Image 1 (cartoon, rainbow over the protein chains, first blue to last red):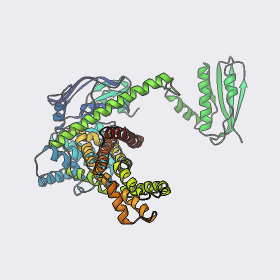
Image 2: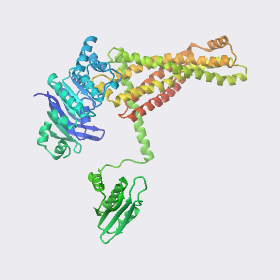
Image 3: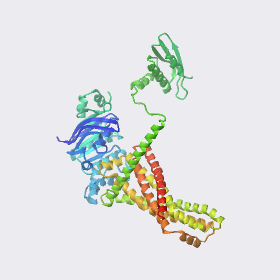
Image 4: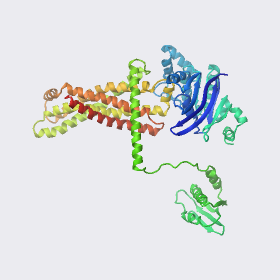
Amino acid sequence: MTDFLTVSDMTVAYGDNVVMKDVSFSVHEGDIFIIMGASGCGKSTLLSVLTGLKEPAKGTEVFNGTDFWPGTPENRKNAMRQAGILYQSGALWTSMTLAENIALPLEQYTNLTAAEIRDIVALKLDLVGLAGFQDFYPAEISGGMKKRAGLARALALDPKIVFFDEPSAGLDPVSSKNLDDLIVQIRDTLQTTIVMVTHELPSLLGIGTNSIYLDVDTKSAIAHGAPRDLLKNPPNEKVRRFLNRGA
Amino acid sequence: MMSTVQLIPAKKELTVVFGGDWSIETPFENVSDFETLAKSPFSAVVFSGESVRRWDSSFVATILHFITVCKKEKKSYRFEKMPDGALPLIELALKVPPRDLPPRANGRKPFLDALGETSLSFFAGCADAFSFCRQAYASLRRFLRGKAVLRKSDLWLALQEAGANALPIVSLICFMIGLIVAFVGSIQLKLFGAQIYVASLVAIAVTRVMGAIMAGVIMSGRTGASYAATIGSMQVNEEVDALETMGISPFDFLVTPRLLALSLMMPFLTVYADITGILGGAFVGIVMLDLSPEEYVRATMNALKMRHVLVGIAYGASYGVIIALCGCFQGIRCGRNASAVGKATTSAVVVSIVLMTVDTAVLTFLFNMFGV
């Protein structure tokens, strides 16, 4: 399997405060790669670095063959055109309808006509089970629907990789399971690579194919591998306790 | 029955017997005796809850306080006959030892430290503001070359917000300001029988600077604050991150439409403020000073020079740029919580009014120097 994303010796800091040091991992094409760890271990910070929002203090990131960190802003911009992101809160633009949210990246990066864009928007909303909601504003739909609409926007440009920041946060168990199923369907049907930050055990054990565990004390990755393998053969006590809900 | 703490010293142990009703609503039993006694050469402390009738957090907090004292004095401790549920709660509280965190800076810093930090923070803020202006300028150039990513509907909406929707409040305030200037002026001018000069006073004062200043202050509180709050909320909701990661510059999408809208609308609002201000003055002149409408209009037209109007428009245009930049800067640099949005909004208004004052002083000096 080819590596889609390779991170080597990544150190991240806020000023003098190092939040993560010497983290290395690879995400293969078609993986559902989980970044897991206890609260405050730097999962979301790592996601900010991977998506170009925060510059690492040290280390490299190669994004589908392109030098991302260190790399030029143009490199990062081009790389991110192959990516979609679902933020924890959905991060839908509140002044726009769901259709406008999904249409914006299409208007920006394609030469499609307005009618063609409308069709693509309808398709993306169909895929996430929100057919008919195109004229709704984000404030008019539920938290779970916002997540799905955010996913539809993330999928607007048929990305090769989708990043998820705590997709199950704030969702009831059934909605959370439905979202997990949707993520697997998207990976299988669109051949999309998934990188997911989460600490929801049912999600990460249910759909994760590869993972790293970030440790809040050592500020480094102390386990690599498929979450289910790590559950069977935990490399250390911290990972064992995490994957067994502290038992 | 009040809570009680009885201290029974023995040879090797100090027994602490808790009794009575412990309630968080009444003051805790005085614990200073224990602290004094704990310094005595006992090797252990026994906490007995045998006589406790009712208890709540006040009971557990007192025991935890005693345990802290025991640890400090290096005494061992044990429990005897504690009420049901109290012991698990104490164990839960003691389960995670306190983290060894560096002490937080509390209280006032030495004067020189505070001065140094404030200076560094001021210069860093200036550098940040300069960098923001540079990026806003680059975005404006991209817009003029047709390469900026923004929705035309957003630009029209911003123009409408900064223009037509602001007219009612600008009308009200500027009419009142014209009225006040005329009224205050008339009191003095009446003494000399020179009421007719109220028209000149209002015309020159309002068109040259007052109209622009009032429009600027209104737009700072109304539109500048709205820019900061809107963009700040977008920061909190990660909407700005979503734009950035999608390769859409927040400057193109959020700052440029607002900057253009307010910069284009402020000169018009200034002229509108001038007109309503003069109408306010005319109301006083006609109704209170018994001047005829024709007289008032003639006196106004005689006093009014195009250069006064143009000077006012120049002030207004510069205020538009300042207010839009301050509002957008505070929004884009807003933190990630609700209180940060409030702070950004307040700062947008305060900083823009301060900068407008400085701008007025500089422009007034320049206009005087060039005899405008």
